[in-house]
Image (cartoon, rainbow, N blue to C red; front, side, top):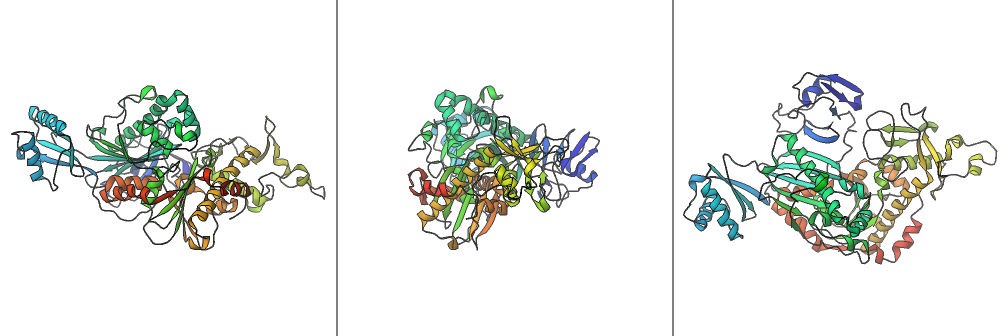
Length: 600
């Protein structure tokens, strides 16, 4: 079978059966196997692309397949679909939902109350059951079909499920970061806390529009059911992929925790998001919510995964307005250290928080999909063929392409770099306009060296050629239009204006903020210097910038693994103030001034 290593521009042949780590060793790129291939150390974790999906797997456990691409490289460029996250503080492993296996012979079958009392005597907790009817149903089922092991599913100290099995249940848990564009999923062992697999996929709702506003509009026009169906089809596909990676079954999943923006929380929990599309933009989801995973995902996929009957699907609480539980989870995941911190999560909707780690002021602002590469003339997601970095050394544009092949377009980090390079080249003014034809000629009449790269698109929009077909062998000319520049300009102005409003509302000055945490996939891959040059993020002296990756995913995982962590996370809304920018008089003034590409 054929195995590809795109970052090394290498293809090898392997005889099946062959694991991913064996293929890497055969190609001359051995993985770390500290545990000698037992699958316990996690050091051989790599990304692979298989059947159109990008998955993170344990190399020593996962079988290679014909046509698989193993996405490893010396500089780590393979991690373009972000499931990696901030290094967080240690936690106490004490899952909110867990499983206790018991030998059936140790239980009292003289009646349901005695049955529960005998479990209470065996287990290390004081066990109760809030659903008396369910207790009697479980008791009758187990009496009628005895098996050697009874698995008790417990939430806190409440019995929420019982099943008789031939062996102890492989209790598994899921954590999801449900984004507008991408959904990241994590599969954990709730017996020992081990991370078994991670994966991510494009949110199937993108067929209804690239931003939350378009999806709110679609829901208000009667598309709520297909929107929800598309979302759960994506989630169900991720569940199956995560289980397939590890050889587990969805029936072993007893808990799933979801973090997401406010609009996604409405779709998850079956609430109509229409009120988010009109003033005063009130969310119908304001607290933690347990919900049911639909039995059928609808026309978008087959039946949903068969979770354990007692599985709890739990959505974390939002912070207000369009600041969702992805921000709540992110704040819960950040290191607990003293000092004021500014937290910016860049995406189609930008969420910003400012506080001391105990109390925050938060706001959200619509950025549009430009910062994720969507909606641009040649924009694309951060996958093979996307320009992810641009520099302008020695009067030429140097572009780095994901996968190493010809460029097909620009992703979010690439567009930010490209605009910074145009500013460096002197052909883009700080007000966001390309140099005019007269400016390119100059007073001397000698054309600017880059003047011949300007032109117009078929619909008459002025554009600049970043790469000619000759400079991009096997690929098209890569162009940036004036419209593309304006889209990024508006997103940048929204983020900067919102940041300034939060600073004013909190009474902080830049010298009081030692740490800036930059979250999300886009925030993880952009070059800080380019983002600061544009004014997308602050360039304050003495403020350290920390890319934290998928902090929302990290927070959701912490809530999956620890009762104290979920309690801490769900207490954050009570100590958080939401600043509604639509009701903040200074926002519009700041926004107009912030449209210029310059550091702040």
